[in-house]
Image (cartoon, rainbow, N blue to C red):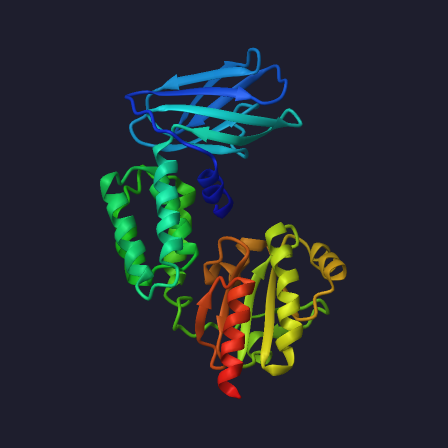
Length: 338
């Protein structure tokens, strides 16, 4: 979801309000055939002519919609459908995969742009959770049915940017019958686990098999600072961030810093192959069944990369720490110890 939210932030926009929606689309490469627009329980179809296509209709509230080359194929790119004119550019790969290259005319894009700006502007504020809570509260109250707000709430929960009580209050504002079932499922999972994985809580001791099929407990490897990282061999962002963590690990591994990385995989070979390619030097363990693994579900992990920085007592002191912030925190901590 992070990719989608930041992706639409980069897409361009200019809102044109109306009582009906009109999708004015262009396929960026030659394509002959039909496109299908799926939203709610409806499926509309149109033939692409000279790389152009249009869809029109009316919806009761903003909702997720898929555009695909095959009927009922919802495993493809999606956009937020609103009663306005949307100008859409798409690319079709292998005559099957639809990728959105630009979406203009969306009020939701404007709102997420403003939300991201607000979050980044106040990222170091002590009352960040209160600031985000108030903005989300205002948005959801303006239209509890808007599926974009449900998606935004699930994303904010997964980042652990607001506390458990605030999360509970915001979730009750949503019209659960109108929201996307996938987002509501994520919200429910995160609510059940947010309380034990927020800053200040003690992170549970977990135990999973390592590359030698030996159970490796988190408590057995913890040091003064421990980064508990959730990753996957097929996650490009995870690979890139691990390579940056490697430099930090080499610098601080003898000064009380450890990494305990959990790989969410469908099979063991993917995990072992990744370790061989990347040469990771820290403790790694395997969580088969990915997000359906009982331990992963119990922690409310719904996306990778996700990480938690623990102190020597196992208390969570930071969540989703990037390499630069991690390096600063370790440096500050070690300076205090001198």
